[in-house]
Image 1 (tube, rainbow, N blue to C red):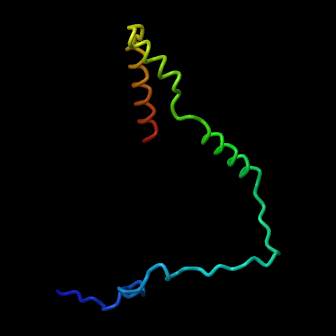
Image 2 (image 1 turned 90 degrees about the vertical axis):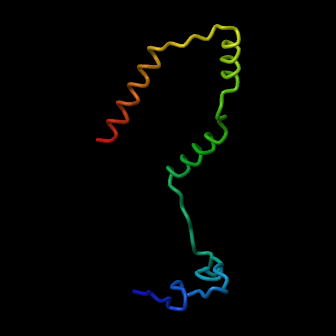
Image 3 (image 1 turned 30 degrees about the vertical axis):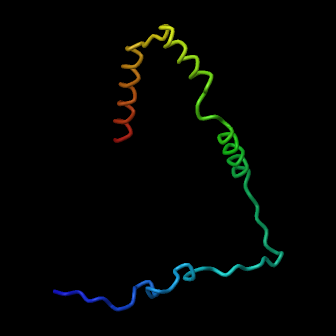
Length: 98
């Protein structure tokens, strides 16, 4: 069975047309009667986002401290803490799946 092309794309735009013209709303100037009010939650979220943006992703001082400890042989790995952490994270993942 052969399926034939309808000859024109379904979106209503022919191949040569610029797609940016389609469904582009016209800019309207406000009439002065429109008013937007933001809730207190919105302003709280904006403050939180600003605080997050200003927080460094990496604590460079802590990284330097650990690097120095490794270089001097003072950095000790507690394998039981790592094992406990892995077990707890697996328990959380399994609990989230239920």
